[in-house]
Amino acid sequence: MICLRAKPLIEKTQEYLVKLRRSLNQAPRLDVLLIGNHEASAIYVGRKKQAAQDIGIDVVIHHISDHASQDHVEKLISMLNNESNCSGILLQLPLPAHFNVMKLLTLIDPAKDVDGFHPLNKGNHLDNFAAFVPCTALGVSRLLKFYNINLQSKNVLVLGRSAIVGKPLAIESLHQNATVTIAHSATKNLPDLVKQADIIMSATGHFGVIQWDQVYEHQIIIDVGIHRHNGDIVGDLGKKPAEKIVAAYTPVPGGVGAMTVNSLMYNIFKAYCLQKQSGCWADIAQSIDALTL
Ligand code: NDP
Image (cartoon, rainbow, N blue to C red; front, side, top):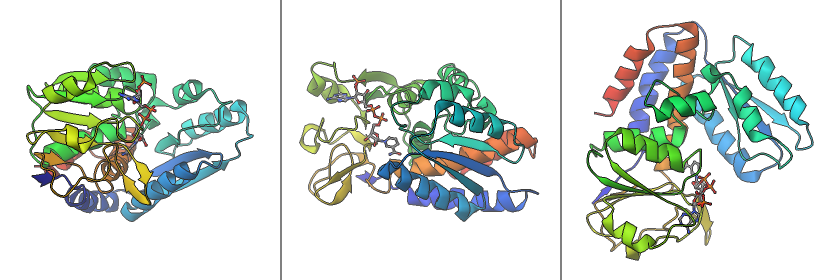
């Protein structure tokens, strides 16, 4: 049974990116728009900032009041789109209810869309054309590759169909020739679908939709969920009982969440290199991919 820890891959990637950063004349810069006082968002932004600074990426956090207007945020995004020192723009979600999220995401220059949520990047991802792949899906793909888990002809069950997690996970799996099933809140007979799966990717945001006693020894469990439960941080399936055997599983914390942050770093360098035409991104991407071998 393999525990798919992110740490070994993250250390290798960081080492490479630090060297890459030293070879650049200028630091890539990430601009984060943090709106309101959402506690979890502030924690996630703090982790992204730390990871970026560890590599030598500059980070500017724009703290915006939850009373700010749509117009105010639109103007800030337009300003950052035109700011040559800004490599990537990240709009931390969720936003207070009065914002038109789709309009804001669509306003971000697709070349600076390091989260991969702009419709152009989403469309390109769907067609397996060069795009910024959303960080969680990219992180899962890189982690599976690192542990030599090939999705070819595997039955992958994705629980969740959100635009930012579930669908990109399903698309990534499809691009790797898996046979993909997407389950959501209206899906019936989930236990039957679980039984047929080789790999289960759970991103429901609900604790215990499937549980450890419902999965099988031959299966691989990718747990995307993040929950606070009895004082611990756990995934959708909760803490794995020591006696439970599966083929492989991602720990929470230390699995998908860590890979998501690391893949944001990947996307920031990609944005920087493509904007500045500094070095050939294709070669750099190949070198980063080679770290997963
Ligand atoms: P959403 O709430 O946007 O989506 C949840 C999805 O789960 C929906 O598609 C919903 O279905 C589906 N769902 C809900 N209940 C069930 C059920 N009983 N059976 C099957 N499907 C169900 O959440 P996100 O996609 O944004 O995030 C999902 C989880 O991933 C959260 O726990 C979040 O914290 C975590 N997350 C983790 C990240 C990481 O780096 N590890 C990054 C981002 C998120 P329907 O569409 O029908 O409502």
